[in-house]
Length: 487
Image (cartoon, rainbow, N blue to C red; front, side, top):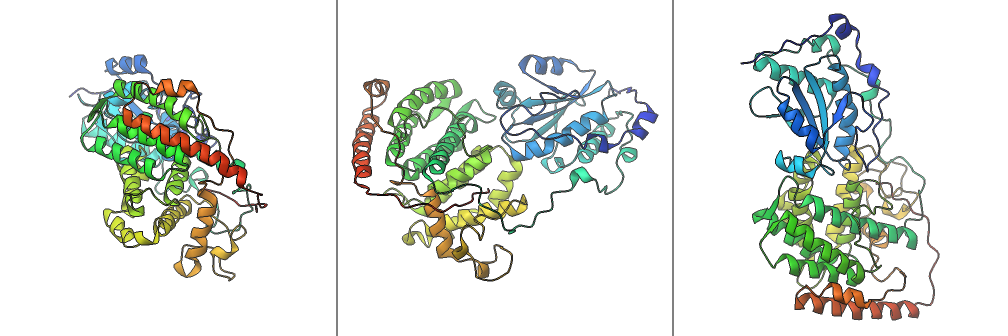
């Protein structure tokens, strides 16, 4: 077994303190996490291949996605580990943004984020267990243990850097009580906010289509293909606005043309569909880009917006509310890259929960809408975000007492909560959107699609015309009360 002779100054190790990195701040969602880092090297295809050839250096690499909340929370810890080994020339830390470097992450079989691998300790890269992706001291300790198991050493004494059970300010969470009163952020039911929420839901579907379906894969087939078809069928059954559901029906028809999609083939088909769907959609160009988040700042926020939007609608004939929930569970299970988020969601939503929700299918979407609301606020509590809605926004949603808001059933008025959720997320026919027309070019763009897709577009056109005339019959709009949407 090869050995490492790693030079590290004892004085430097003894004097270095994790507190030096307490000023590190996580950048917001939307771009590489380590672009300005002096100790973490951002890797592209060329530098990653060079890293693989650099067998004299141990490389610790973080595979991440900027939209993954745990990746962003983990980023300052990764910087801290890089600083621990900054003066150890034979240990380097790198990072790969899987949204920008798809080829690398597919090749390295990265199926969830954050994913950490160490290279050049053994012939094959060693995957770090997800349970160790918490703090810098956990990562550093794991690396040292891995090196020792393979008769290698770095010269770093982790025990001198990290004391047992350190209580450090940079690891303490903000003091905030779940259920504290919060002032409304905006008029949550205004047309402007509803339109932004609709655009966020649409952009999130595109991100799943373009990135999620092929995460760590170059072919969509088998169980993942079936899950993808089920998910798009659910969108065609319950996504807001008839025109948009018709657009998803077109995509379902195209997907079924083959039961195995190579990534290149899928991208070509999806681009054609996006052009068609944007012409069909209400409002137009709704499916133009996965980057068009307007109200949300993260993909996870977009997912919750999408889940709420799907579960408040009366589903299309042939579907049941519990089946929409089953489709939501499938998309999280197969196509959501945040490993910890996925694990927690599936644990809280076992397959047996679908059977329990199915008992109330005859009541419409009520049970599923309330369940998703409960799940969302459970996550808010874990992340120390305010409960939504607050008592200020929906006084009837909670028991009339002086107790802090909680998820205690005794404190919740389920009927009023579901009514509120539906008013916020059920936008079917409630948006007076921009004038919607179908141009001749939109018909040309579907020339390569099947006749069934053409029929779907025809029905969508009639739906658009009906929608326009229906809006003209509306005699007035009541003033809207200010509502908050924290999560």
